[in-house]
Amino acid sequence: MDKEKIKRCKRCALPETYPGVKFSEEGICNYCFYYDIYKERESSIKIQLKKEFLNLINSLKKKKKKYDCVVAYSGGKDSTFLLYFLKNKFKLNILAHTLDNCFLSPQAVNNIKVIVKRLNIAHISTKIPTELLVKILKSDLSSPLPYPKELLSMMSSVCVVCQGMVFGTTLKQAQKYKVPLMFIGYTPGQYPIISLENYFKVKSCVYFSSQVYKDDPLDIIKIARDPLDERFGKEIEPYYFKSQYIEKDEFVPSVLFPFHALVDYDEKIIYEKIYDLGWKKPQDTDPCSTNCLLNMIGNYFTMKRFGYHPYIGELSFLVREGKLSYQNALQYEYMDEAGFASHPIVKQLGLSKYL
Image (cartoon, helix red, strand yellow):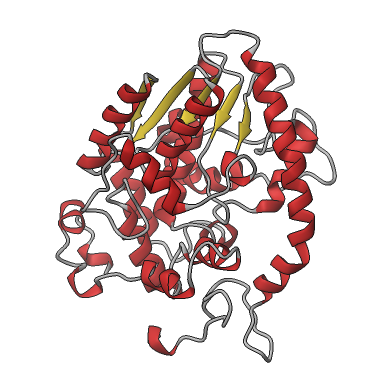
């Protein structure tokens, strides 16, 4: 489909190819209508969440543990700002954890070293065997629908793999060191706002329970893991968490999304602050990533297979929020498709036959 001829929401830029989208006679998408309907409720939820988050953080600080929290740290702009925010505002004892997928930009690797040293934060990493990741990647790219559509509306199949590993390995570090609180730098629009209501049920934005109730949310942890489990079994076991349903006495941390309640997300301010810390923007990543070289592969194949950019849901949300312009959202979608086949990563991984 010619991208120039794709019908888009006149308000948020969401394309007609996006899962579940419909347009009014005025050209406004149903997601914009949902946004408007839920906006007032969302505002009240955020006010209450901020109070709850602050109470939880302050209560944990009084316990004087070695680590107050573990933070999933990718070296990208958002997780870098998150480290700064938590350290500067709350003076937390932080354990930063990085999932090394072997395809982090060299600049991102250097940023990680610079920032944890500058902020005086403990840091550990978990490395994925390159051969395992490449095997998963090739399996996904050769499958017409490697994961359920509710996941692929939020991220590419490449990101489904790594995001599941980021979550699973960071959570396991929290369990290992008995860290009571875990932070993830999901931006507004990257993770459904309605999921934040989980906190009022279980004191965690990621729903964990040892019991099953009728109104439980979808078990996204298991939905993401099951297709991999079927294909790779025990090979993926060390890197993924099993389910939102835990054993009766199993310890899991409370997981919080600070950008949804504690921080008024503003990219300009984020960049200004992390540049001051010595962070430098990688020049070898695509427009939607500030750390990962694989991101552009996921973006390309999602566009080719499904006709929409995997970040457009998040970008359109920011347009509705007035935090990103319509034109900037379209600019983030840009990919040099002509030069994709000759990209070093495509050649290195032997992915040319999937083009």
